[in-house]
Length: 316
Ligand code: GDP
Image (cartoon, rainbow, N blue to C red; front, side, top):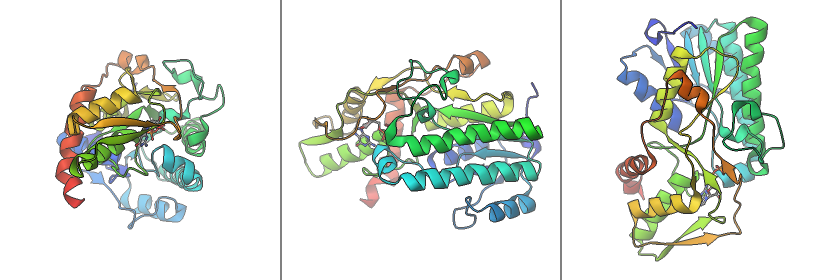
């Protein structure tokens, strides 16, 4: 294995304004990596191959964190399937192709744990990919994410590119999308409990039965894992990134309630979709490499609530 030193080249973070991209930028800046390349959506449409080629031709990145994409929670995934499959397929393809054309030394592609079959054995091992039907609520997104893994592997096999893939579990943290309609469960619940407290409402509606189980990773831990993998992982096979612990949605709602509005009541709405019954990653490969998360869920929630109160709440 060849250890990579990110300070020896130019590092492009594709998607630097998003939850993950902004955390990777923070992590790299903390490590004193100053040769960062970024482009806003207005400056560069990552779905446009010609524009992406032009960017790579002019900027010549050596290392690429491919963490851009159209993302959202269970409702956004079910109501905007075309955007989720088109945007993500295109973004993965253009960036991977340009990285090959312009001689990028290493690329890390970030997928998602929704790539795994709905009825997977738990915890989910990397080799369960494509072993059964996908969860319907996010299938278009998952298909695009699976295509991203296969893209990286195909470019590795045909052209010898050092492109690797990491599959994170559900993420949360500063910079998340707190919109209750399009966001994921954790930021949506922070927003809903805050609004209920503000407007002196008795209860908050939590979608579904409360029984699905999810694993949550604080985004700064994910950013640390991405840098660790960029530096230390060189295999064709994708690798899971998570904490190895999961929690029911009802128990998560109670944690968020206690952090934001302890007097609030929880009202379940079983007419809303549950999605995958359980999504717990087997992270033993990552642990064997020597990486572990450091922020536990209650602390991560407290840090995310603080960020929400400073950045989002004042605009309400
Ligand atoms: P998923 O992991 O792809 O299913 O993404 P989500 O984070 O959107 O949803 C996780 C689980 O939380 C699902 O079972 C949802 O039904 C449940 N959930 C409960 N309340 C909410 C909410 O207010 N917003 C979202 N997005 N999910 C919620």
